[in-house]
Image (tube, rainbow, N blue to C red; front, side, top):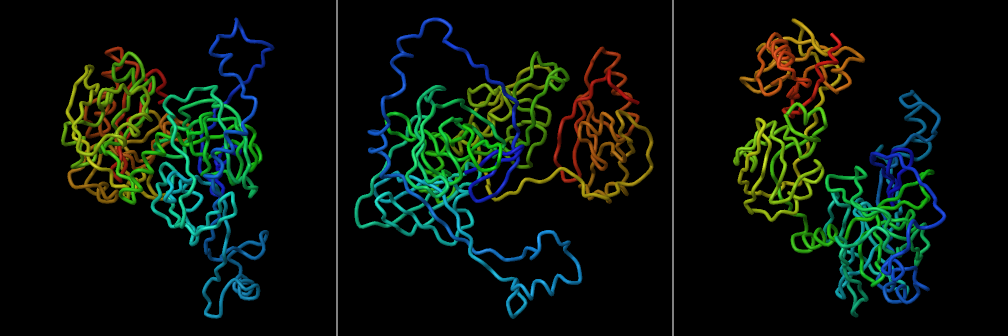
Length: 503
């Protein structure tokens, strides 16, 4: 199970990933305001969950894994590494074999899962099995079977297993997570802390949660207690259908639940499982853009009435977006008929779009809307996301000319372009220094970044930047939008308020 402790999420195998935590308050009131409705009375707490548990629990399984890892840690936790005694300690305490190679050891893991077909198809979390050499599945009746990994998807944290059995296996069905409501009762069954067959109940306490676990976050939040070992287990509705796959918890101590858990919605899990069963991998739609959030300052700079949509910060060469005419600086407002209110909506909608389908994309460009037809291609899951930071100590050169917003600027000479390993013919203004505590530093601009445009106008030297800023001020504009590109080719739009110029 993944748990959020301080500002991190932790899964059942002890791995961490970053999370953004929102402050929250809770107000207790002695009674409902106004009279309860008939539907509220009809949906009161059930007298017992026993019948539901009897019906579905035979299909909930307990997963144990083993993995081989190198014993490469230091034998004494408090002793500094890199000392002349390191080799002695490793040899003496058995951390290396007779050939000098690191010794290996077996580590065990545990989790939960559920059967979705009588042929033995099982759903669990990817983080439960991702490094496992062996996977064992235990049923409530004591039957233990070895499982085969059919496929896994780290982005949604879903994995599919299969077991062979001489008899038809008990199974459960998917529910409709789209119509699950905040306040609905739910039941979690799983293997918390190795205590198989544990049942807890609660309600859906929120929906559409983004916990920074991946690009397609859309978690169901529940207060049904789930703990380490519940990972991959089912979250049931009162009709015995799986509405979610338990994946993460919020915890103050890094291990135990305090009543805030997260489940992958059935809609997302069901679609991922179907693709893994059919192809052994996921096949998602791809647009070929790098996007960023439209902030209030960016919206003002683009002449929009309010912040919404997804800002295109870069277009992949040869991708669907480039072929359709989408450009850097476009704000995607609508995709295939769906309004994009927040940036994080777009990756999920595009991923769910059938490959090869041509869709209408409405963008905001030059102060007005424009509709483009885009043929969605397939996302290559193996392509790694490029970073946008220069390596520490890299030197783009000298020849500083002027500065603005705490950024020291210089022309992009051929010599400097070669140092930065830029493509031939690259243009712009290079940032050769960033003053600590300045607006530029606060915005994340780094030495070696290239300013390509200022509010839609290309710049070729530092004076162009200054002239463009002064021109915007003369026109009464309050925001200058810098299009900044890293040496690796990634772009980002950075807004600077003109009334905050600290130079």
